Length: 405
Image (tube, rainbow, N blue to C red; front, side, top):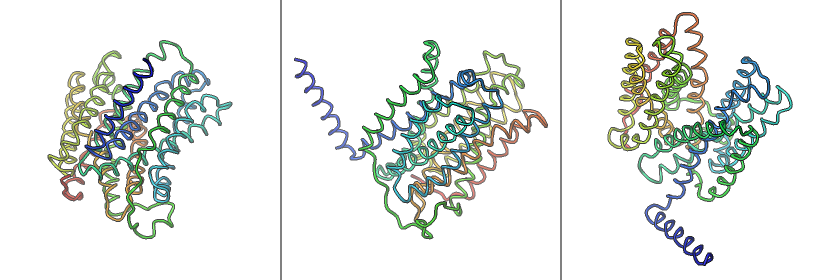
């Protein structure tokens, strides 16, 4: 009886698979990358949300914890341009598999660090692995988008946001159960590696293109032309995104006068609207085209931030930051997609250059805002973000070629 039910179940799964492949032969490739984006967000938050326990477990001061986290960021930025070379040589498929496995393995390993310097090294390795995985999974996403001949990049990034939210919820349960760092992260690591090894068969090989300027001989591709334009847009967007993620609660409390209980609602509004905008982003790209959608997003995010600066009241800030999140939601997925479709440049190579520039802004954003807030005040510091949003909008209007996907 059990054997009969098992065969029925396997036959049912096989029929679903065949039906999906008949609709589009790359359906399972798309499903796999959906899963990869979700896992990336889920596992990132799984360790990041437990930094208080990491600090307590290893008796780290705030300064020491800051250097540990900085080492991860440095690893990420160092790895991203190198990943472009590796993708050009081996393809995004294998780079993503290796990068993902290294990231998943590094999570439980850092919990076994015997000293502070070992922990810094472990976090640098984890950051480098995340950087390689991030660039290569976006390269895979672009390759799949080409085969679908329609925009689907925003949906991938939406699943990253969903993964982050799911990871945050899971950590609340883990904390309640008082599960140790090693058991928590090693269990997730093993599960994620099994998933990647099983689904890697559905990943696709990169389109071969005639690389410009003997790219095969270069370890790093120096950004120029369209890549610089896309990189500047990503830099402005991600610097603002990173700064607002880190400083929104502080703005709510110190400028808006909100209580500690109310303050997180602004960040929830920002991130929630960003996720919603990414789910709707692919249809919006088909309706408006890439150039218009980035421009509209820049205008919406700028207006939202202006309202938050002029009327710093908790309810207004929550609503206006929702508009900012919605405006920024599709900018990075679009520039990644456009960078991955530059004629004569392999998708992963273009994306690696743009992500390096963009993530530099994401990393620099929080300390820049902190410095400006210390010299002036937090409202003036946020006005600096507004300037970047205006620059981003101007570049999209006058320097990005008109497209309609």
